[in-house]
Image (spheres, one colour):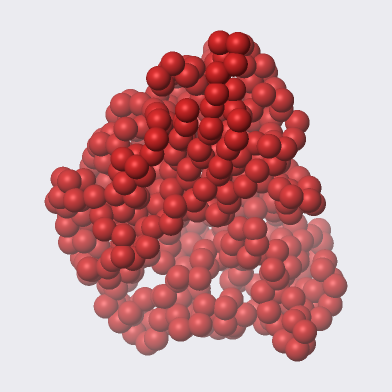
Length: 518
């Protein structure tokens, strides 16, 4: 007998095959294309199947932002997922971005149970319902344990997880899996988290913070039959210690699939063999027509909303070379800094170009330009830091650059693999600094001035950065919540729109206050 487990993860609100950069796109991702692949797979699969949604569904796309702003709750977004035969879902870290009320509205709207065994409420119980579920498919008893990365308090505003505590996924699995083994033939762990080490070699691939515990789940928890993962947006289908594991990218670009060959021995189902796979979605993959038609009206509302003009740019604020914009200050980057400084009433600001798709602003700016460039729902925080804190932060950002074999400045591979982390390279406005890439890590900041005077380690400075970074996100340990002295609680996407409404026309300027040299 065969049992097939299907996984979706990190859809991030991408229902249709478009990133909304322009109308009429037909790209190789999206839940409705994935639904078509799933339908075909289920029709051709022998034996019963299980479908699990592994988190990060309600945040991340222009459509999901529109639903938040214009609808007020997650119901219209959750309708799309309820149209698919999910057996269970898991809470992802980005589910917290829009606050607990919005998250609870999504959980309430879901027709399937939503699991997160290691997120506890004040009563020390699973905060979103059950920690696990037991289901039976054609006589096979299946346990599904839901786990979420414990690192959420390092990224989120405290209001967004008030009353909740986050425990290690590893330790929680050690607690639950032995009990689930007694109750079920097959134990599936669905973990919204990734791998802290190379799965084959065990070599560390990142700082061991506990954000990702997938490798240790595979190697230290006895009794897991299948491990489903996500969070890192990687493409993984392999085995470790005989345990199949998959991670299906993001935006619905792959369907995770694990096939188990089962046989009965002494009245129990046992696994004779397993096959982890990923089924790719392409530009040629058709959408599932029934779903696409049902939700097309919402999509058109989003497209019309995105085309609303909100302001104008005088000069050139388009980004033609995103890496050059990280090495030489670009007018778009300076504009973001100006918005942050204006609303935070602060004269030092830090920001990042979050990915390599940033295109900047055309002369006529629409909401589409805003949400496709500034992709995260960040709020702002003003921190009081020392000169030493700020210099260490810039030194950490400077690790983004290395010299390649030709002696040219290039991107550090650690910021590309195993997960792109362009959002962890910050640029600053309001100070003057020079980074010399030819020098060792930690010794690269040469010039470091504020208002023309060299910044001393003990100097007190006020800096506005996004909330993710303000609480130490990206392992910027020199920042934490204790240093926050004020906050701007309106998300940056809205602040950018408000700034254009106030200013009308914005001039594209760059004062080149920082230099990246070799």
